[in-house]
Structures are given as C-alpha cells and as structure tokens.
Image 1 (spheres, rainbow, N blue to C red):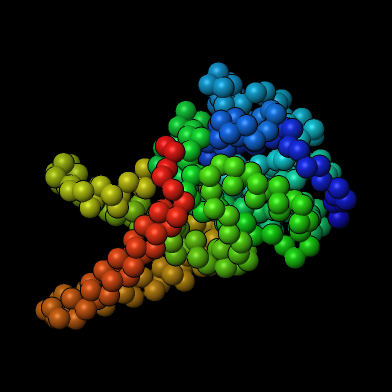
Image 2 (cartoon, rainbow, N blue to C red):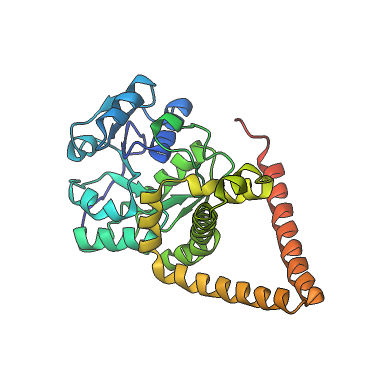
Length: 305
C-alpha cells in the first residue's frame, strides 16, 4: 500500500502527464486561475511540450514521467485509457495526490490495483464531462471545464484530504464536482457519451462510403452537422474507450439497435401514429433535459468564456 499520512494543504507544483486538449486545458486553467505556483508537464510528443511552453500553458518540461511527478503535490494523468497502467508504473508514488481524466474508470482502477496492489488512498479517479472535437495542446482552453460536471470515483479507503485537493482543483477551474461509483460511472457514460460517439462515427462512415457522398455532405443541414461533429474526434482515443468500456457499451448498443429495428418495422408498415408516439416521447424527454440544463446555467451564473 502506498502510504500518504499527511497531505500538504498548499499546491505548489502540479504535474500534467499528457499535454493534449484536456491536459493542456487543465494546465492553462491552473495558470489562469493561479491554482498552483508552477505547472510541469510530460508528453511523449516533444513538439506538444515545446508548444505548450511557448504558449505559456506550462512552466517547465520534464525529461520523463518520474522527473515530472517526483516533486509534485498533485499529478493529473491526461493519457489514453489503455496507456494508464504503463504510466502508473513510471511514477514513484509517495505522498503525492494523483487523479486522472479518463472516460472509463474501471480500467483506471484496475490498472492502479495491478501496479500498486490496491487503489492507493491518494489516487482519486476523475472524469471531466467536457471536451471538443478539436485536438492537441494548440486547442487548449482554460475555460473548457467551466459550467461542466466532473465525476470523481474515489474508493472506500480514499484519503479525504486527497479528495478535497482534487475537488478544489476542479472547482477552481469552474466545474461542478459530483461523485459516483466506478461501475455506475461507466454505465452512465456508455449511454451518454460513448454510444453517441460510436453512432456519429458509424453514420459518417456509412454516408461517406456511398457513391454520392460528396453530394450528401454538400447539402447536409444543421442536424447532420450537429450530430456528426463529434466524428471529427481523435479515432485512437475513442477506439481505446470503446474497447475499455465494451460491456456497458454493447449492452446499450443492443437496446438502441432494437429500437431502430422497431422504428424500421413501423415505417415499413406505415404505422404513423406509433411512430409519432416514439418521437413525442423523445421530444418530451429532450425538452425536460433542456430545462434542467437551463436551470443549472441560471444558478451557476454567466459563462466567463
């Protein structure tokens, strides 16, 4: 077990491992809000590190993961979910607080247990529900997380001071922090994030394979653009996510396919009233969701973007 008897209250140095869109946005937000004295980063892409330093997003560049994390008060892992275990093996974890931003929490917790024998009390898994189809540190946005939720999935033995430190980081970046169990998080995100991305990729791939694909995209209306936008996201990252969360994803995908088959049969048989019932239920649910979002925005105040 990694011991962490005392967690210092002041965050002097934050290490960001992985300086892409999310890692870069975290670093930029920390700098903008003065949440730490310095921000150090490591990424396998030296050009990303150099650009982040030139843009003032980070203060220093580490030669390797161990150098980046050894003297840090808080470590943020912004790496692909399938890379988590190897990154953890390169960290000499002592009393540093560590968190991650992965879209699948089960694989992060399993990786930590394989490396450390159990989930360290100072490792607080996390996931910001924010992002963009844009990629790389060049797209870093210090306000990316403002008025968005961040889900933390601490373990039963997690150090309360470590949880507080991670919550303070996200609150400082303008996010609302909520807590869930690991399994509940992965089930919810399979439905609300992973399935929509899979469907967007499948739709664009299907239409682009047709002989008249150029015309399809030329005359695409706003609905197609809105739905297909996320298909411009990083394919490597999302293929990793689909693999890492495959059981909940396949389960909700089966439900969706069943619904599509039902709608197909209704359309073929001309059951207009039943089709309308499905669409009406969906509209009521979507309107309710929009109202909830509007209320949340009004309570949190205007965006500072």
